[in-house]
Image 1: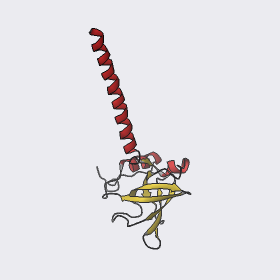
Image 2: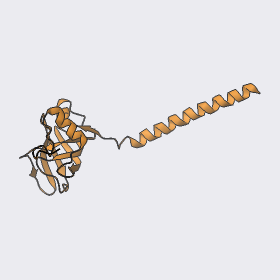
Image 3: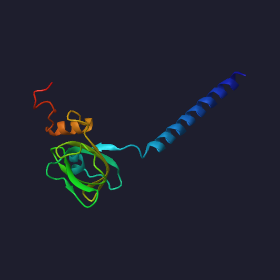
Image 4: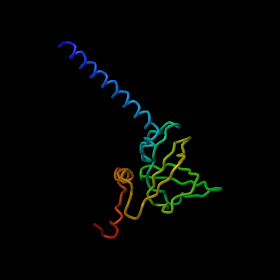
Length: 152
C-alpha cells in the first residue's frame, strides 16, 4: 500500500512537469511574432540584421533628410549621433513627427534601408522612449529637454 502512494505521487509530479513544459511551449509559440527587439542606428550599422528579422529602430530624425515621395511614401534618416540609418515608410506619419525629434519605427533592414511598417513619434517635448534615451546617452549626444532652459 505504501509503495502505491509513492508511485502515484511520482506519476503526478511527472504529469505536472509535462503539462508545464507544454504550456511554456505554447506561450512561447504564441508570442514569437509579438516580440520585437530594439536596436540603435549604431548597432544596426555595426551588425546588420538579416532581411527577415523584424525589430525596432529608434533615434532622432536627422535634420535635412526628410523627403516625401509619391503618395504616402516618406524617407528620412535616423541617427543616434554615432551612425545614421536610412528609413522608408509608406503611410501617414504621426502629427508629432518632425526632424530633430525622437522616433521609434518597427520594420526590417532590407538592402541597407530600414523599411518601416509602423512609426511612433515622441509624445511631447519632455518625453523620449527609454531605449532611445539610453542609445543617445551611450553616444554622448543626449541633452535633456529642460537643460537649455536651466530645468531640473
